[in-house]
Length: 397
Ligand SMILES: Cc1cc2nc3c(=O)[nH]c(=O)nc-3n(C[C@H](O)[C@H](O)[C@H](O)COP(=O)(O)OP(=O)(O)OC[C@H]3O[C@@H](n4cnc5c(N)ncnc54)[C@H](O)[C@@H]3O)c2cc1C
Ligand code: FES
Image (cartoon, rainbow, N blue to C red):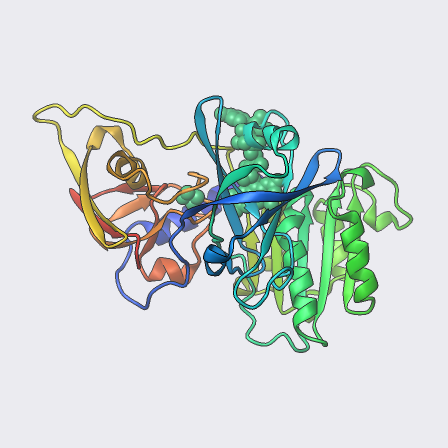
């Protein structure tokens, strides 16, 4: 199936599941996003266009920065007078640098995106000692396996998509003496491979339990199977010869939309239950979004409006949104509460999640909420457009 067709089908499936959300069920496990000022403790080059950035976590906020392997943090900076928020996955094993009461340091990896505002600035502008606003860790790209003993976890990553998988692989291997991890990591050439040394160190540490396969699209490797683009025929051969789906308990996919979609479709075709396949996208399928500014709007006297009521930190507020403006709940809410949590504004990070208590919405995109969260009435407020005269959402539950 062509990536475009697959994307449309996926969007239809999501839209169907989300037309009207239900209320009920227990509280979700995600926490409310809050920014804290953290100081840069180290900047380490990973490749010519990627760096690892380590932040020191002060004792008083350490419990806020406890995280699960696979989670990410949002950074907030002002560049050329405009606020920019970008998410970056935590790349270290969960216990690294910790002392039992939360981590002393957290590390992320930033790859420069050609023409990208934040990542380009970070490569040259970010220095040891700088202070940056960092949100507490978010996200559900984490293992759901109750027991790692004997478990086989597999990851397929491309480019900077390796970052959460570094944390996942190291944590899975560290947590049990009988777990296994297979990683398929694709890049253009060996010069583009992020964490090259860290991956070989991990392989040295777990020679029999870590299987590491670098696929290079523009460089010849000894094994022809690992040389060339990771397209469907190559992926099928890899799944036939190197990572047998029948042996895998949980899959993690992270990379550009077309690759993630290809992997999901192929795994589904091979009979892998979608419940065992977790994926994360770094950008919405159709590219980055402009930040939701939540600026003032003028409402004419007889203009139809939607009343949006929301609760955040125990405080309830309401805001009117002109129906014709077709604003998201987030955009309208930011008008009266600038601290409403969000990061990507594109339906991929999950930071803006809230529970719909009254009314109904349609969501444009959802690449962040799990099916069980949808069933419990959670919505991504950056993607939710009210379809009733009034809606009530709660960011606290
Ligand atoms: C959950 C999550 C985790 C992530 N983890 C990581 C990570 O670990 N490491 C990592 O490197 N990145 C990660 N990302 C991606 C990261 O958040 C940024 O999106 C990335 O660094 C690019 O940001 P930027 O400001 O440099 O680029 P942007 O300015 O956002 O631009 C991105 C690209 O789009 C192009 N572009 C910009 N505006 C437009 C437009 N209007 N139309 C068309 N093209 C446009 C730019 O030229 C550039 O190529 C993650 C994202 C998410 C959501
Ligand atoms: S802000 Fe990222 S999903 Fe809404």
